[in-house]
Image 1 (tube, rainbow, N blue to C red):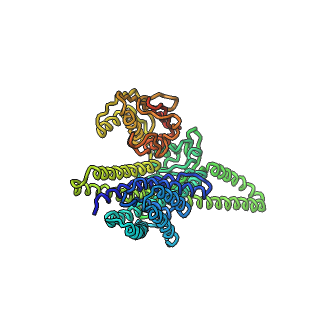
Image 2 (image 1 turned 135 degrees about the horizontal axis):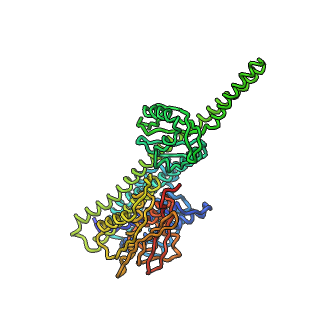
Image 3 (image 1 turned 90 degrees about the horizontal axis):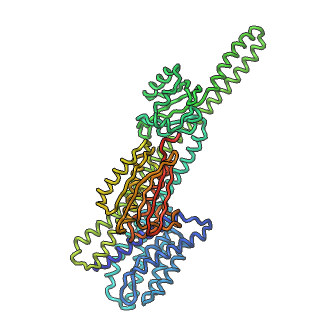
Length: 608
């Protein structure tokens, strides 16, 4: 069996895998309201992928060629529907006709057979697309390429083409596997989008309930940290959520001195996993006194593990004033009752009506608290599911990549001495593409985790941070010819671990894009601007066209090719996401061939 055929097909399908995955990823960002127009645009994209793959074909005898267009057309029919598939079939058929050769007509038949097989598979399948598995797409690929082999057999026999099995046996081995892999990757993305949409809907519902509730609610973790704090905190206490998060003992310190014993007894009950409800006074930040109704409920997970306590605080100052007035009124009523029995009955009736109304109000408030508690549990469960899903996606995506790299290494080890320079080059291309895909997956997962990572805010010495980052870069990347000049950097209020990632991205970018200069220079400096500090990383490298400035911080936005400078196009998107989460912002200036300056702003002190 011809090893060259396997190598050529592996290279062709590895490229197809990358193109289809990127097309499916960017396809979700295309915003066209007209459904038919969107389908046509998708079909044009699929057709272009097929035409590009057909350019990198494996030529056979007498004008016959083999490429992986049958994979993309079959997947298109099963996943994206009839309109995009027919557009792609027409484009690739015209392109195959222009390529010429005795096998042109046979190639066009294979194109329409592949697309129709995918459409029929989707039409008669009993499963929803999101429930398709690797096996489903593998069987589809096996059917398509089994039919393709039959068509080519009769065509080869007609034109008396020799060595029929040499190129087609690798097709039956490799193409169904790649069909299963591509289809499974698309289904995984659809499943992830559904989970994210559900989480966003649940989070939006929770935020509406929590943020528009006049009660101040918070969730205390088992180690005493505040995991969540509602916006009503400021209205009731005058202190912000950040102040309570930074100092979990703040509530105890603002309790009125005469009510400290009530709060201590309450804490004792909560420590023994008892639900408790108490009233006590607190001193607001502006010095005024308010009464709050404070309740704590232990929270347990599905497996019975202790997750902390959920606390709810309600401003009951008006109720306490009303109770005082009621007591005073009762004294006056008592005197009036001594004068007349009739007046006594009327006034007692009014008092009872007031008590009934107050009880009804208590019932309504308790119902609302129960709903908030339920939503809190749902949000916690949803976040755990998202973490589990991210782990599953990471494992499932890396497994086939490791397989491609492993088998390529085995092929090189066992058959390397039999290969020519061209075969060894193709194996190297397969390995490099697979590694690049693995890095892309790692960067995407890191990008998605940034939005969920809890920030540990503190005052950070940026001079020491940059010093450690430079040391780490030089240890991992090796010595650099760049002259790195670091000025005095002001401190900032931030999460040190996240800001460390910002510095790593910006400094490594500066080193990379100035590496082709004879005398590369990198300057790191900062400027104080009011309550913010501006940090800058300047280089004299490749630079960029200012008209593309708005694209720099987007996901997968690259202004240079991979051959010029390596990278996945996610680093600057991570930088922007981290800085924006800190309440800052980013900017960049540059000129082609002259260099670039990347800047970001962070708060100097904790926001009030």
